[in-house]
Length: 331
Image (cartoon, rainbow, N blue to C red; front, side, top):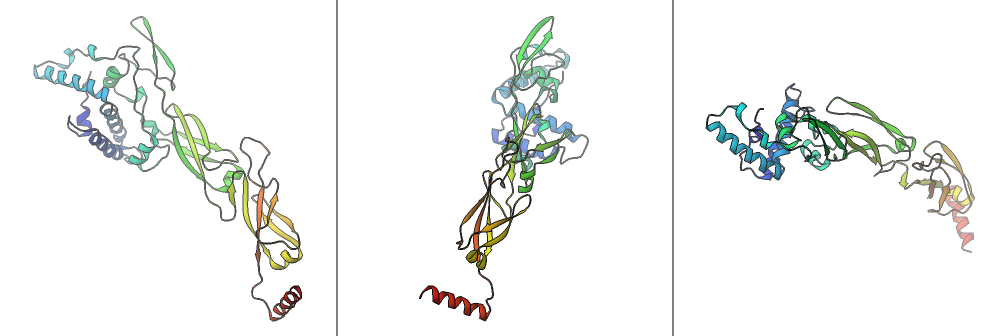
């Protein structure tokens, strides 16, 4: 089995601090990330950098690795050949399980400059690590295994059956911006992963900022959540399942009564304005708001606030008539 020099992989000394390890990893991960570097060898380098960080960023793994490294170097100095080194006592015993450091969304954003789903395929899981890593930290048997998040795995070795609890993988979030129209009607987004997978995610009608759409098992075995952000609208303001808007009403209609057209998300409707309506009066239009999530066919209301507009400019004749009405009102 080939010895892996993780310090050399990250280009740091054996006395490197946690911050120095993180900085080295951040720089190299950016350099070799498959989304950035199209060199065919970049993906393999990215995996090696990730494996080194998995070990050196974990105090227990790093301590074990350092002890192994000291004995390995002593063995080499004494003229020993790789095939004669006793790897057995360093191998993790079956059934002990192991833990994996999964990058948080905040760390992903810090390193790669975004919170997207792209890149999550490169983290976690035994399948992406070398035999050296798997032997020391992943169960101590050839072939490896895969398992779902937080599930029990069963494997055989030497005629005996072992069980190990796979660590629960950490769910991830990816922010998705949609328009109010998309939130009203429902929409979809196409997502592409680093490993080449593409999925079309459906976003149901009625979602609001802060809503989460769950994509089961899409984050390297864990769940990917689309974190919805609904963009501001030029006409409507959303308040829960209701929509609000300022409704322009001309002075004459407000004074004498009449009909005005009211825009809604799906159509334009007519609203009867009573005579003597004051600016600020709010009219509730039932069922013309947003669809209510998980309640098929139900919608909130549209709240239309009357905003009185004076005619501009007034003609001389209009001014004289208004003055006469004012004089009569105050007589």
